[in-house]
Structure formats: C-alpha cells, structure tokens
Length: 263
Image (cartoon, rainbow, N blue to C red; front, side):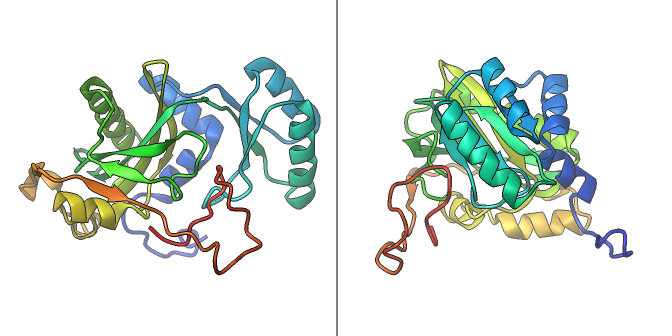
C-alpha cells in the first residue's frame, strides 16, 4: 500500500517480501534452487486440509498466513485435531489460506541472520537452537556459534542462505529458519527483514549488523565495505524471558506459538 501510494521503499522490494510469505511462490523458488523443504501445501477449506493431510501424513504444523510470533500455530496429530483447527481458523479469517507443513519430529532447529546487497551476502554466524523443532524460535534458547551441528551442515545452511538472498533480491537484513532431520538440512522459512536476534548476533560476533544493513539499504555495496568474518573464542547463549509471573493465565507449556516477551 505504501509503494502504491508513491512512498519510496528502501531495501528489499515489497514483491520480494510477499514472495517469501506466499508459500506456493516460495516453494517454487526452493524447487528452482534445489533446496529441500518439508512437504507442504495451503488450504482454504476443511475438505482441502484433510486431503493434504492424507497426502503429507501426520504430524503436521498448521498456521494462518501472514502472522508474526507464531500466532495461531499448532502441531496436529490426527483428523480430529486438524478439523478443530481449520474450523476455528476459517471462522476467524475466511479469506486467508491455512498453511500446512509436515512437522519434522526430533529435528534440530537452527537459524541464520544475514546481510545482503542483492549480489553479495555476509553471514556473521549460524545459531543452534537448544530445544528441538516445535518450539518457537523466540522461545528457544540458542547457542552462537553452534555446538553440536556438523561443519558440513553449517556450510550447507550458509550456502542456502546466500542463494536464497540473491534469488529474492534481498537488500538489507534477512533471517532464515532451518531444521536438520535424518542428516538433511531443510528450509523452514525465509524472512527478508530484521529479526529479534540481530542485536544478539551482533554482540556475540562483533559485527554491527544493523549499521551495515542500513548502509546497504542506502546504496552501499558489501564488497566496498571490507567486511571480514571475525573469529571469536567465546560462546554466546541466548535465553528467552517469559512473563508467566505477570500473566498467570498464560499456558507455560512451550510450543510453536511464541510465549516470551524478550530475549
């Protein structure tokens, strides 16, 4: 709407942001790049959702489209749970599709914050989640750099991040979410925007990501900024801040919907 109104948008173009949010378009990009994703589809009715479940098999991760903080996300294990979820979701937002993904049980989750100028990409570090897949990234503790992920998987995530950033024409910050299951790296989602973890990664690695990304959004090129990947001997641990003492009615059982109020 801002772009249509004539407002100049700095950084990543709105169409690239929309492409990352549109699951079908994004899946087509991943197929083009040869990057694995968990099986997924979108549904606008209970009939469609049940047909997808039959094809993909349970357990499934279900969520509304265009949400932040994992709002409305659930893991479902059978037709009854899926029916309850879809009926409630369609009632709330009948015009928006429901996203259905195969849930990778016992998978290790990891994420990457990167800076891109559309041609080159800088990745200060990969982050390893301490909780297994299924806990929202904002609620999961995290190690920078990874402690148990093999080097080959770290290289794969860095390669995927660079290829996706360039394909999506990202200019500025981008956050990538990955899962490692059965010795294979899967892309869960791409967010062509700043994430909550950017200041944490910056502190641990000594790379001022927000400053560099702002310069890139204003037209500078990474190759002209002499940025080198810094080596550091310490380990940073991110932990979530939970509001359970302030909001006793909030369910303390962690899941795909974000509960924390800070990190």
